[in-house]
Length: 144
Length: 396
Figure 1 (spheres, rainbow over the protein chains, first blue to last red):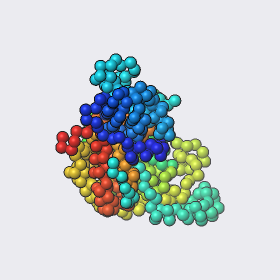
Figure 2: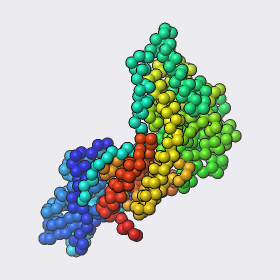
Figure 3: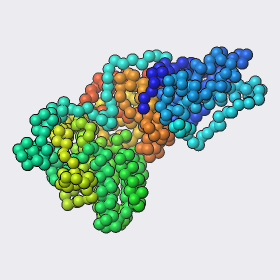
């Protein structure tokens, strides 16, 4: 198994690590049994993500995908952030080993979970798919 | 975030493989360049190779306390495990109609997957649990053994947690039930003295690259008089049991490595002290750590510790950036999606198995290596914990 240079760069120098106090949206996905948990904090002004931070418990790919996901949504509108796909995260990282694809899915879900929290807080109806809390089975995406 | 810097290279994964010892490489060279004959050839060029082969077998068998004709060279530990277990089980079914195979939950995949293959052939396989410290549950073994048991396969020392099993006692129980006893001693040979007769086993496997010989050579000890099913058909080498022209340079290398390891057994005390110093430091100075395995019934170079709230692959990658090679029982570092079956068998929850680190020290390691690990490890663990959403803090 080999990581791309981009993955290693984001793993060794993760962007936007930390927490945001009084965040407008916080989302947590994954579970410790499966070996990865991602937590995403959003600061949103006029529907624009002005700041984003993350904390991740997980492997190199989990840290790198979280870091890349924050980069891809920072400064973008909520609508644009909702369009972020795991594929876009994978492409931005110059690919992931097949067994690590589920980390990119988790990153996409962390963003959605944080946005769902934002919608709830401002009393807006959630009109997108929100990841379900799955404590039972580990999130495995089969190789395409 | 602070840059991880590399000031030294420390290889602390000797349970994965060891570098070929210079003495071994030197001992092998003549068999590539000068003594290259086929040991089966009758002319002098073949006879000199035969003589060298016989001598290597004699030297290797002496280290293990067996007779030369009880030792069969193989391509490695995995082959020896497959042969011993499948050959032994099938032999006992043919001769005595026995169809029960007993093993432990913490075996190497070479044994576990061989057991599954035997299950597909109609064998019944019992996997005996280990206690919290990784030692086989002997009461469960006693209850599991029956008159149908063909073979008992329990590893001598575990590759992840280094736990040393009471093989003598297990052999005795297996034999009382009329079963064959096989032990995978791949991790033990070279690290602790191994005497096949004292152990009382019928078969024992070993691997060269764990003790300073190259990859691609191993051996199976098979007690005299026991003739389990042969492994490879062909020209009748290895007393007709495992055909194929003998890999003389590697066999000579294995013999040299075994003798070298036996002569260096005293150095294991130094290795044990280094291991214990590292363990003590980690347990005293890094909070939320768990010592995995038994502290005394353990290979001298092996240390296995779980760091809670972090994941092992990240730890491995950052330590690698610092120049330190270790391994982990995390699912993410392997091609499987499950954390270490050994750590789970100890009763460790999955999230704690994900954060495990195995250090395996050997002759090449020095006190300076341990100092360097001590210098680098705490910062790297802290760094990952500072990023972890589940870390409660050092004093929680």
